[in-house]
Length: 221
Image (tube, rainbow, N blue to C red; front, side, top):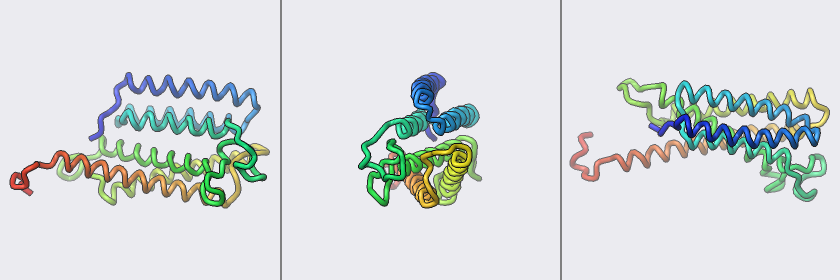
């Protein structure tokens, strides 16, 4: 069972998040970056959704800060200029389009994977609090349970692609990219979900090992 964040800890995360979103909104309006107004609205909805899950199921402080940091990555990615040789000629010069490994890895894809990983983690924490196994104990991070969480995380990533699609239809110029970019985004989502599921399983195994009796003869199993 993860330690649930206190209301005071939640408020600290909210103050920080609202603060950087307000600053970002100023840069967005000043630069007439209308695409990012859409993403600012989406981030606001995500914050409200996370708060809703926190109230119903409880979330850890680490996860709450993780979502806030994810928002920072989004805002910085769309508003920070980069040198011309960091991106291709058919994209705008912002951090989102930074080709970390040309032809393979872009900053945007890292943000995608990180975000889907967070959603996978959120689903797991919510399930642990709200769901019990047949023996009445909290559920364990089995392959089946983690697959459900990872699939849910990837579903959120697919929803993000739908939002990007509408951004392309509504706005004349965006940083969304083409069909190949969408494919790489979805692959990054998959990697993020799988890595997070493996981390959840690894952390659970480590905690179980610490809780196990030091003397094997006392283990009744």
